[in-house]
Image 1 (cartoon, rainbow, N blue to C red):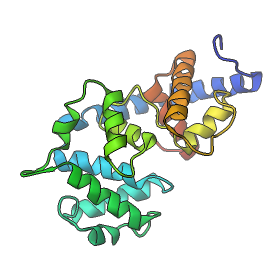
Image 2: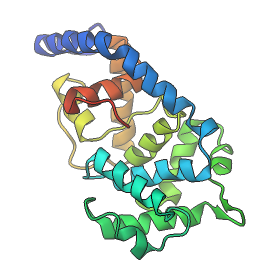
Image 3: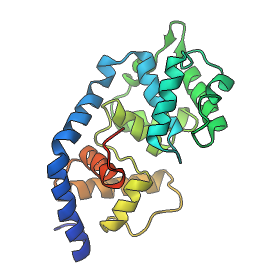
Image 4: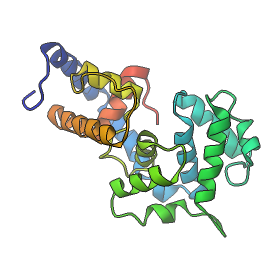
Length: 224
């Protein structure tokens, strides 16, 4: 590794990671291709379901959160369900009371006379960073990690990082950061995101690919 100070132990881990990437690259590329079609193929409620999913994910299992979103959608609660209605579907999601409130609040942020206008709002931004800033400032419950996750999942966040606990733990293992910070404010998030981007370039794995690859390494699946 030429520009990053990587220990010999970490270099061995990187070689193993690159080996896993070669085996999983096609699957990762396919998954990201599905994300890239999201804005074009999904309607307003479909895009909102991705946002709601990301609002549920903090300290909860992703698959459990997505199952909850599918239940909410099947019951036609995404567009019109009350906070209590939605709360009742989130029993297996941590902090379900608060997260039900976040989902309803986010929905009202994008509501118009015809229903929802989340796709229209997103198209107003000149770049993904500006869009992420707006989301963090205007959607309660959405931090930089969740906003980045949402934007990646709808195909416009390939150059930003989703710094969840799985990713941070791996960044320590690969000597990209020294330790997992107790909390991530804006300045620290952007700093670590920059380091992860540099690391991705160094090991020649695109940032969005690296995120899914590390998720696979930790969980054994390439999901959302």
